[in-house]
Image (cartoon, rainbow, N blue to C red; front, side):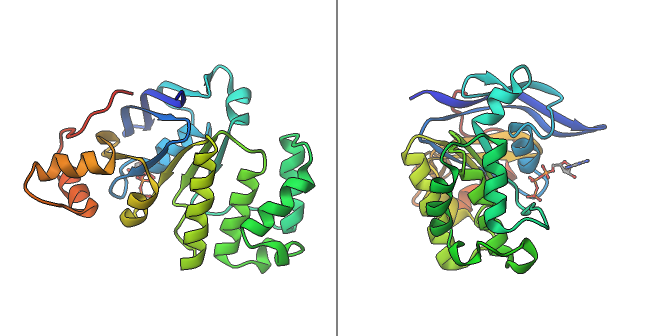
Length: 252
Ligand code: ATP
């Protein structure tokens, strides 16, 4: 399976603060990578760089083979970024958001695509509502519906499950898994480790902007337990992020 996302030596500084340092990893077609790390680890910074919102200070990002810096339109066409705070247009209704996004991305058959998306994200009866009339979880679902509309091959989510009710979490997990099963590469950040464990094939742990672990849940747990019995992902996370050196490597 091919790599749809390739990140090579990504660094991002804000003035003198190095938020991400020499980070490398890749995400294959059909793979779901969970990006985890303590507060301030550099997760949002990494995701914004991947989405082309914050250009990196150095390093290279390739989306479906397109260099994000050199060939940004082609790269951005292949991705959708769903930030942690829903950003919507105050004066567009739910269905007008989808129509607007369809126009920007030149989506063919947009209304046929919008209907099942509205049903999938339980927004059908809110189609005429403005963002101010939606709950927080509904706004999040609308933003995700907008992200799914052009069928991107790379999905980037910052905390997609926070703010959703239990049924919403279950459905969102199913929506994400279905898209990965259909071949999308997914990268998502979350502090909800049990959900990361259920959803993700690979976990990337960062701390202080640096990669400290990258592997399957089983690999991370094995690395920490070293044959001394079962550990939870939470135990593994706490142990990994309290050590400074990388404990689990995987080639980018
Ligand atoms: P959290 O889990 O708390 O959301 P995070 O892992 O997403 O954290 P980032 O938001 O990427 O972390 O922040 C990484 C570092 O970069 C932090 O030290 C933060 O203060 C700093 N930072 C983030 N955005 C900016 C900015 N726009 N200007 C200056 N510093 C920033």
